[in-house]
Amino acid sequence: MELSQLTELALSVHELLLRRYGPPALKPVKPPLDELIQTILSQNTSDTNSERAYESLRAAYPTWEAVRSAPTEDVAEAIRVGGLGRVKAPRIQSIIAQLEAERGSATLDALRDMPVEEARRYLLSLPGVGPKTAACVLLFSLGMPALPVDTHVHRVSQRVGLIGSSASAEQAHTQLEALVPQGLYYPFHLLMIQHGRTLCKATNPRCSECPLEGLCPFSARQAEG
Ligand code: SF4
Image (cartoon, rainbow, N blue to C red; front, top):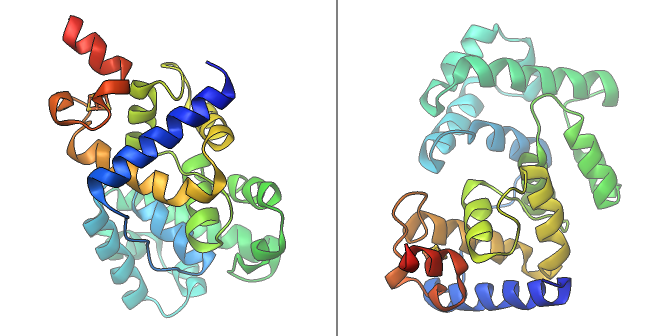
């Protein structure tokens, strides 16, 4: 399919999901380092648990510098409610340490003055930061044109044919950012997540209730199968 046809398809998907779910609620804006750490805490857990882990971490330490200098097991304990504390605690401390070494303090505010691709490259250079986490910081905190592709956005995009069935996470980001209009990145991301959580689940998608059924090749394959 040509890029212009894929953009048409993305616009149709967005419009149909918007009609189904209504305008999505935007997230509160946080400073970029706060958004980065909250996104790391959200890996492999629910929104509720990651929010609890973030609040617990903020309550335990007055500054990000204090998080970096604390014993790693204490930081892991503070974020335990979010799961994988022993993996996420050293990752968070490494990021803060790298910022202090490279930028002189625990802040990502310098990203505000960078072009989006330079800011993305810097975020990707930090320990444990992949394309989705970087895009979350760019979009939610800095208001830059980046489209986070989580597991739901990835799966739904593949099923409706916006990206190929073998597209990697990195390719999915590049391809979707090229075909979805920038002004729709934020609502498109949120609507696709909502759709992936409610109807287009990983197993047993509820195609007969889906507003995208008429345009979805995956649904057609299911019916044939
Ligand atoms: S028709 Fe089925 S597979 Fe396609 S988007 Fe809807 S729920 Fe997902």
